[in-house]
Amino acid sequence: MQPDGSRSATWNPVLFQPEGGDVALFYKVAPRIEAWTAMVKTSADDGLTWSEARALGDGLIGPVKNKPVQLADGTIVAGSSTEDDGWRVHVERSVDGGLTWQRSASLNDPDEIGAIQPTLLTHADGRIQMLCRTRSEHGFMAESWSSDGGASWSPVTAGALPNNNSGFDAVTLHDGRQLLVYNHSTREQPGMGHKGRGILNVALSDNGQDWEAALVLDYIDEPGRQFSYPAVIQARDGRVHIVYTWHRERIKHVVLDPAALVTTPMPDGRWPQDGPAALGAFLSTR
Image (cartoon, rainbow, N blue to C red; front, top):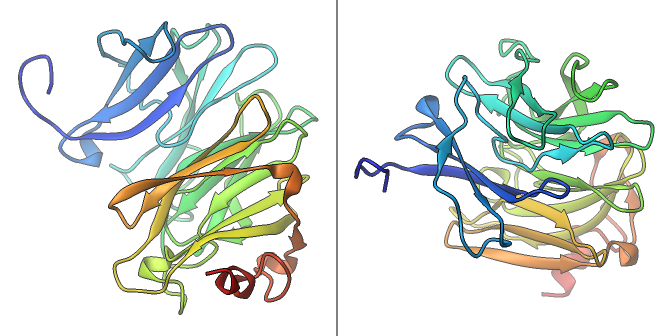
């Protein structure tokens, strides 16, 4: 329900708490994606009560699906995207704890690589890595890098891992490794369920480029059944929390200890056929 009494769809909620700040809930309001209005509410009591919603304004979209990252100097960088003029990614940055934001230009040419819904990873050398969902015909995750706190970015190029035109999420762990939750499949890949969303995977990397298979979270190869749109965080106790859509009927919550994960290298981005992360190992436990 909107303040004027009208009703409209709300989309893609993202929770984020800057260092020393209030919890922020970003979301979109519109009857369709192309007409989104970006909104934010804040909570000073860990989500018990919330402020009135306000529009971000100034052409801002906010973090479009995945959480922002906060850098050592306090700068907040949010991955964002639009779909009204081709699939285009951009970033929105705040240097005042999220009170005001600046939007970058589009980072990609949608006629070359159509990309949306970026997730951001931070590296020990100060670089930020962006991984993006891409259009079905591409079949790969796209990536870009920033060496100046998100102010400028390298050209958007094909990454090492597949993408089935479905959203994913990642997190930089306390130990510096990168953890990714995604559908390791392409859209039309046989045996991978509805639109390649019949499998949900976890991978780890030391450098964001050489990924190793950690485990299969879920799998089913049935029409209309899917595991999709994951979100992931690491809690203060070190455990990783993953939530994702379970057949578009409910939300599933999984808790992992990343220190206990045994990984298998993925040469050329291929999921292993043998070992603890193989699909066969997952199926043997069902």
